[in-house]
Length: 251
Image 1 (cartoon, one colour):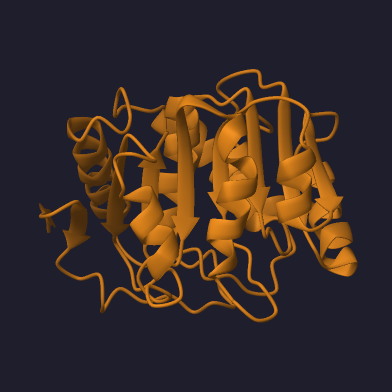
Image 2 (cartoon, helix red, strand yellow):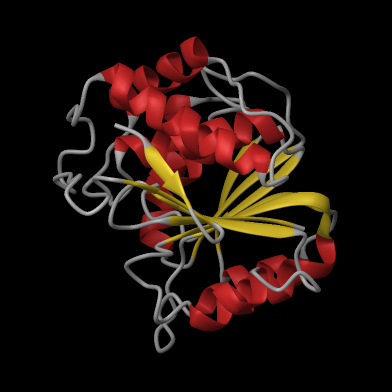
């Protein structure tokens, strides 16, 4: 099975039938070689679009990461599919962000999909600051427990805060921003507010990853318009490999 590229989008033929049980995040949904091949295609599409500089990553390191997450993480539920997990980890492994901020990390799984390229058994580089933001204090505590069990002593931290305020006050530049938060009224529409708070700190070439670009497309209309505006971002592509979607943009 292969994917198709069209008008700033990469879409697999089975994106709407590829399904996971959100309470069974570690169940294998397809043959490993099929998952690898589709993620490779998505990365090649992003490279051809100039959004990332290379498309190869250390697959053995990813497998070490995935196995360690299975052994150490408490995940009540997640909408991050195995394909999405691999893609997010690979993008971080390729980008190697010195400073990464992930907004809306719940139990920490979405955070470690990003941060795992720089922390834990599958780490492929040495980061400076990997931050997960979760506005609910109890979930931030669980995320911190998960991350500490996975990568004790690493340069990772979980902060209970509003991602908009944290990004606005962050001391330093940002090399990768991951968005998966939800506002009390705007829902996923809060992505644009977080991005605007972080925008001036994004270095040239910084990646911005926005989950739910398919199933929350209506709420994300203003966000998607922003990142697809070449006056604001250098490029953007919607990666559709499941019914959630991931918009990958470069500053």
